[in-house]
Length: 436
Ligand code: RAT
Ligand code: ZN
Image 1 (cartoon, rainbow, N blue to C red):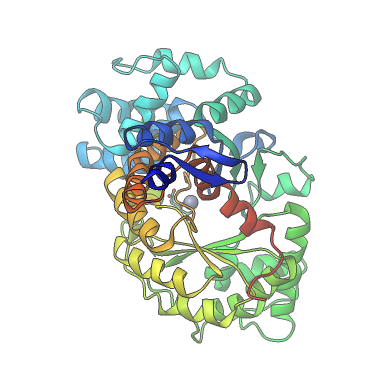
Image 2 (cartoon, rainbow, N blue to C red):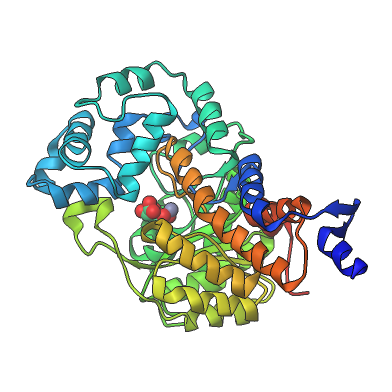
């Protein structure tokens, strides 16, 4: 009896016996630990201040986020063509009026803007944006970035860097100074998915490539990737893929993946991020907001994981229907790291379902979330929401564990939260090889 009660109130950790947490205190301890841990945001579309105008921030950018544009057209009679003809400021005014004044902003994306305004003590129910605009105009970008990341509880964000973006490439060519708070990612969509157009750009830059990928083409794509790895020092390479993605097949996409990208990842010791499941441009009139989702055949992912045991893959799938399969593949292949609840999945009800499923199948060996922020201040609400959705889920897991007879200490929770939100990613991006 005595031994049993002692077992229930203490556990042996590295630092000796540590106090176990009572069932009633589990949720508040988890909340404190989530609050106190500075996360790594492993996929965003943000830019370090040195990239100048590429880094989006402020109220007009927040309101013209493509998630909100999609919602705007549901509640406004304005045509997309008319909307695109407006200035950014007029677009933001139209969205504010429609989604925040004429309607109650209860969707996830609209509530996010309210949370950001509130975080800066700005009015959340004003008929116009005068005060919010004045506030953001008065900010200096470097200090604002620091303050926003601090409010979000984020220690570092990972960018998405497209070497073939004519607006972005010049900054890299000027050898931009590395910024410890912003890590680079070599995004390869144009090479992998758009080869029929992209080969001409590479050719014009002095790489001996052709559309058929004959001769030295694949070696030259590897040279291009190598040049950009030296220039950007990325933490991983990445591509987003359609729900119809097949691998292997008889396309330039398969060839470039297997003979250029995968070997380059091995050469540089970098993981490859595959974001699978987009139904591109189902409504092109909505531009960036015009993409949808489709269920993918993850047999292709299985083939990749089995064929390249020495490569590491970060994988996010967009369809809710693919989530369970992804967890099962992670149990079979330890070169797979599932990450994030991406885009249309980043809503509390779905995040909750996916995260519970992942914990039950994978313990702490996955990365629960990334923000996908395109506008700086979005990290404030996206990470706040992640913390509040995750707290009861983690607390529930620990409650179950203590009911089974294993007490839980604050150190356990700290270790787990750190693993989920920092070290799984950091270790995955710092190892050289896997599977051997
Ligand atoms: O979530 C998004 O903002 C999407 O538009 C995509 O950018 C997606 O996250 C991606 O990286 O392709
Ligand atoms: Zn993204």
